[in-house]
Length: 124
Image (cartoon, rainbow, N blue to C red; front, top):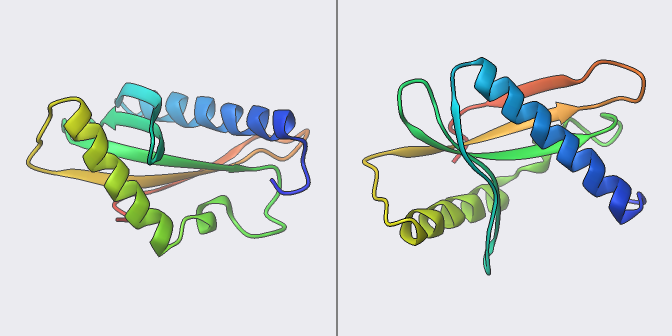
């Protein structure tokens, strides 16, 4: 959200996270935590999918696809960082699940039009 004032950008991001969480809950997921922070960074959403698998979701929100789809903002470097953050979350919460995954949810919120959501599973 380059060129956008910080507060406005944060508002767009918050709206995207709200929409992503609502989507997950509608699909039978349980949101465990939002916006968990540690000194290495932040996890947007920690959730349990309907099968009980722990999923760490990165939410990327844009007002337009002019610079690419929101999900394109998560490259290999960001995916590796998300994996490190997931392990930090697990350690901080004393949890060691057999498996977990990292998903990316892209939210496009064009002004005056309905939001579009794309959910990519197991990106890292």
